[in-house]
Image (cartoon, rainbow, N blue to C red):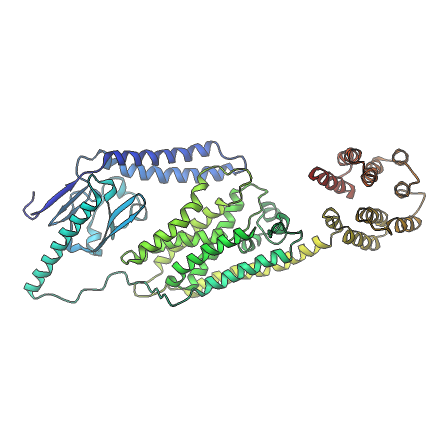
Length: 579
């Protein structure tokens, strides 16, 4: 014992618990690599490899950082009147005079003492081994040093009480020495200012965003292109109104979907859960950093989540939801808590964020099951974006300011996002209007009256295709039970050339020809495919579903893809299969 260490206690590491933690971390890293070799069938293998390697490196490094402690022969903690010795900083003493404050952090499975050090003393601390080569954000700030009581041999309460007792004695001795020397000065202010957290101030932007999400969801129900089920819009409605869909974004250049999808939701439960999490995030974070940067982090994270969702998920996935932006906010809460590490609010920020953030990300490590509706890829993208932006924010936040700088830039980011989303209403409205007015869409959607009206309009626009649209109008009227259908078909037949095709098709529906006689009148392959399709419709109207199915399958195999009969056969088969 050195002369200055009049009181000294040593505590060794619990090697069994350390070994268990290391094995768990190695197992997670190995599982991530295994996932890369065996990616889910509906995922992009390159994206799975990227995130698998990222996870393997992260958890592998954590395991490597613990290995020296497992094989160390020295103590895990030394408490003496001179200060504290930790294996993180070999052969160095953290003197009591360098410790500004300390606190105990306890949660499920974790029990630690957190030391807040003087900046000058923290800079003098030197790490050894792998920890010296890794960035400080990974191994922990030297301004905030943790003592993991749960990894030491002995009772955690006893170790903490002894630590507090020796610390109190050291602080009292220092105070007495200063008094005797007559050099007591007013204590310097803490390096990190108290957070500007005003419990009476409301998170205004959070409330406005909640109202916008509810309004958009009401719009989904009101302007859906198909009837909602149990209060939830259909997949086609979500796609038509702005959900992410890789073919539309990549091939159709509809990149604006990345901005509209975060405002949309797939069901009332989806909306309610996201609104609850957003409210929690607003109460935690908006009142600390201000609405400008809170909004910017949300919108940037939402965009990051949309991009990750489109990139990683199956190509035919339709994605919606504000989850990416919300998860990004909670990741930003954890990163932003570094700002308030010396204040009591830091722990509440971290605990509140982790409780929501971890469940939203952990399932991403496993393969998604068939029918999975939670977009973990979007969550991951939002979390990475939110954490990165929050760390950037910390560099732009002077110590003396209650809120970050460059609020105007943050507003510009949010305004750009909102303007793109609002501007997308134009293509969305046009696409929806076209879809709603499209007679083929109405026909296969069971809206036969609207379909018949649409086919009549198309028949009046182009005399060359009018005979076919009159046939489709008759089929729609027949399916919808319109008694005028046969009379209008007879009138249309009298207006076309009775010596040319497709007049024989009219005679089929007017009961003047049989299906076999119609097929015999076809003069070429195109007319043959048309005769096959319309005899399928004839059988379907007569209730002979099996024979109709065979005719539609033959038409699908023989008709050119540019023919309306090809689309009609495909649609009728899909509807027959659904039934």
